[in-house]
Image (cartoon, rainbow, N blue to C red; front, side, top):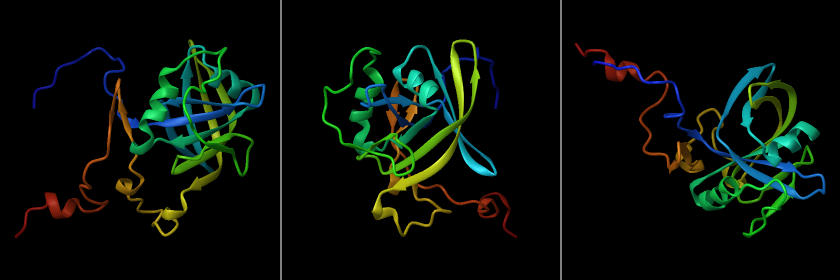
Length: 191
């Protein structure tokens, strides 16, 4: 396979999307799509998230040091799209109907329509050139009751049905390819 070099840019970064929930100063909920997220583990599970520019979500996190991360599934993609494309630090995002409650562990808004929600407390903030990198402890995870019997070590992504973001487009999860350790069935020559 012959490869060529291209300029480093945001051309390919497929990843699950989350609606980040924060509380405005007036106690109103605020949600914003963030895709620059990853997970880490250092004694406890963590979320690593970068937010750039001027966003009410970033202002709220800098002030309160907490947020919720609400997994966006295919069935709520258009609610998420609304929150992700409606930007105004001075105005509430309430042009559409959505249901929320406050977190069970932290006072962060949790989108009722989300199947999988992390309640997070920020432990470290790294200021970058125009962005902030937030490291946050996952303090609680809320999942839809219908996933109660799911094997949490072998999560079925088709059941969760997360929407995947690849710059300016949304995708859904395809078929399962296989599991860890199955390489022997596919790469070793049979005798």
